[in-house]
Image (cartoon, rainbow, N blue to C red; front, top):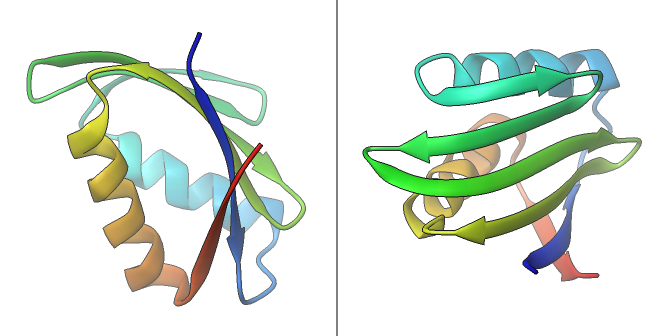
Length: 90
């Protein structure tokens, strides 16, 4: 069992732009990529399962484990790249 949230972006971003962002974000992490889904398994030795799916308005996330540092990193990178974001529990 984990936490599930939608991350919505203020500005319209294409799925291709969002996918390229995640490719770059995860490039130095232990992760697995599936069709429109990225699964991060480790960051700085912290074990987790952090799934990110590209949606029409942003990202769907589901996570468990020791994910706090990655979540902070993700939020910092999202706001730097795309500006204002909204996070909603699902």
